[in-house]
Image 1 (cartoon, rainbow, N blue to C red):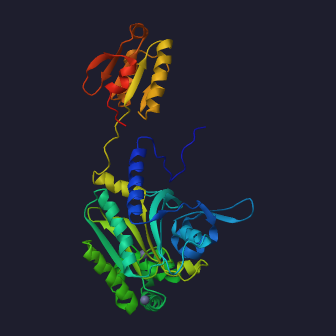
Image 2 (cartoon, rainbow, N blue to C red):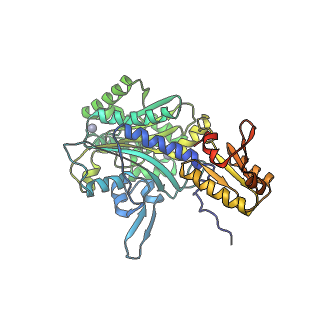
Amino acid sequence: MKYQSLRGTHDILPEETPVWQYVETKIHDKFQSFGFEEIRTPIIEQSELFTRSIGGATDIVSKEMYTFTDKGGRSITLRPEATASVVRAVIEHSLISKDKVTKTYYIGPMFRYERPQAGRFRQFYQAGIEMFGASSAFADAEVILAGILLFGSFGIKSLEVDINSVGCQVCRPKYNKELSSFLKDHLSELCVDCGARFTTNPLRILDCKNEKCRKVLASAPSLNEMICDDCRAHLEQTEDLLKLSHVEVRRNDKLVRGLDYYTGTIFEIVSRELGAQNAVCGGGRYDSLVKELGGSDIPAVGMAIGLERLIEVMRMQKLLPEKEQGISVYIAALGQDAQKTAFAKMVELLKEGICADMDFSGKSLKSQLKTADNLGARYVLMIGEDELKKGSFPLRDMKTGQQKGIKLEELLREIEPTC
Ligand SMILES: [Zn+2]
Ligand SMILES: [Zn+2]
């Protein structure tokens, strides 16, 4: 029996992990520079947490959740996204209140049972930030800027913010009504999915990529024209703050996001150099979610980044970091006594924090030199029975090809560590 990773999941192999570590390190650094602090929540939660927050009629909840009953008879779900978990955690541990701003961020795997396709996985990684306790547009702008500056730090070009408002509890119901009465006359022209959305979540139809639906929507009432004065002022102020920060902003009144908890301003960060699926990050304000999940009436805004997508964008724009340098010293040992001496020397190097490795199998010198080369070793120290007798050991600089005899105790002085 040969096992394979589950459909829609992927191993991140040793040759790829340096890229992931590079990306994760930058995320930690950038978000922390904005004053966000990392939070790590469990991968499993009570299913109801997601149904309540993301919305029972959304694709995520109705089709894509990994839900099971545990041995205690509880309904458990692997988190499909992190916002609900973070909100649950900050309420549970009293980390938020009305009179202070709490800034958190996370990195980790999420799970959705989607049809696997290029760049879309059932276990995928997201990083994101959630800011609580700030209702002003400054908070929205700061969250968006954290994303822009992060992508900028990777060298990603042609970044732009698509922005919209999905309205608040005052103006959204009015718009939903207006949209529904418009769509009622066009039901036969919509795609199958949108036919279903019409009864559950008509706003999501705005987002449909289907040609037929796009045609119908061209004459639909505009969400932008119907939002209330407060929503409009908030949206415009966010746009102004971004322009002030030299970020390109584009109003997109067809932008909605696939989760119910958003209120008011929502956004996506896109790279113009990519095709249709050009969003690298998305988010928005969710001012009622904390209360909905049992907390006080505390406003919040956040965003999430898909890391597979981000790395794909970096690959396309040739921004992946150069391969890391190899180890500093490889010790080639020939014979049992030589191996013992080599092992002691390797331990000495490792204690000094210098990357070192050796061969334990007694292979030929030629094959050991080949291993050293594969490891990208900067130096090779050769220890054999003859050398042990003479007390002089060849040290080869693999970069220059030069070789000279040294005493073992001179090694640290003779090398330039690469790590
Ligand atoms: Zn409103
Ligand atoms: Zn559609």
